[in-house]
Length: 220
Image (tube, rainbow, N blue to C red):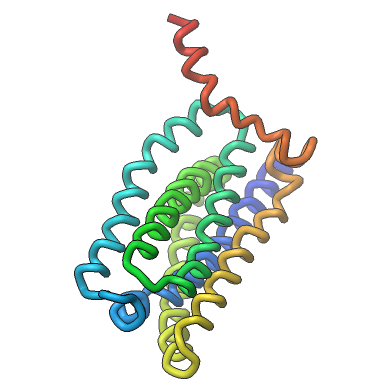
């Protein structure tokens, strides 16, 4: 029963974090192309396409290798660490948009965004899958999908209204704050992810991510 309660708490916190995260990016989704065309020097539909492509390509290329590396690590603390780091990285991206004026600024930020998102997806999916309650797999995935879809959809309207009334910068700042909150929420799991806070941040054994290669060689 205790394990079930812990798993329920972990799932709940992951969903809460997901709602804040996708609320942040829901604010930006509908307005981002308009921002590029109106506020970036030389901003064109082509620049919009390149910026989107950079993010998707970087995220896609990193997703599987990160998953393989994390699967080689037995401890869940590595998944948690990668997830929180990814959330913090992506939370900084909207603040970068505030000071962006040239296409290459966007391309750089989109590259970092792709890296951060790959980290998030690798860590989040591993922890969520591990703690999902048996017999409720479809329900709990569905709850997350519903919560994310509703929050991002509502915030899309809010983002459009805020830009109309107050401009892009306010929306970027709010999105960044929501992104930071999405990572802070996960500190509520400090007693439920084994090993993460035992001896502080230095207890995260990052070298495990690379040591698996040596172990594999030794076993052959």
